[in-house]
Length: 254
Image (cartoon, rainbow, N blue to C red):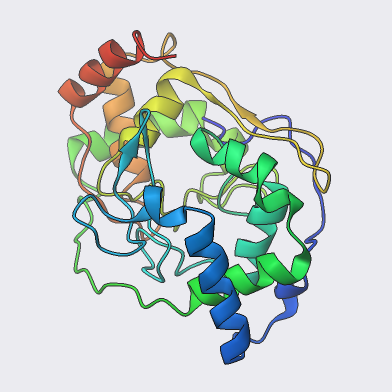
């Protein structure tokens, strides 16, 4: 289960990679202006209106949170990793796919380094929520079954420790997409696969192969429950019925 397949190793491109984590008021203001003027809130605001905490489902993809929540937001990403993602379409944690692929290709990849650095600095200034989520116990049968599926189908790319290969196969450990309250994106990517984008800074587009025909609903539910609750991750288990429903829905979704 490779969230980035056939990618290339590229060095960080942004000056934000070396930022100390402090930013001037002018930089933060510029970053906020760019985030708001480019419509980020339209996808990443919660359905109830909370700013940039994610959760909105758009075209079968769940928009992740952009705050510093360490579980479902960007709390584990450095400012440099955020800037690299915006400029190249990938970093250690993610590869842009779905609606975000077009945003990277048509908008953020064309921004200057100063602009993506400002966005990164602004997003790193947003506090995350404190959520006390307990992981599913390692002794749970779904975790045991899911661990076996993961070892067979996923570990070759994402490693047994879930850390992936930097800028080649995204890490599952600490991933906001993996730990999202709504697993819609995970279900879609595992069932149908996903195609990322090539940018000028990273021209080879990465891809995730589909596992919908290889794994049954129970196997997918188990492996998703496993990756959402190992390596320090914590999120609700995924039910077999949820996989079946997603499979049925995706058959009608381009």
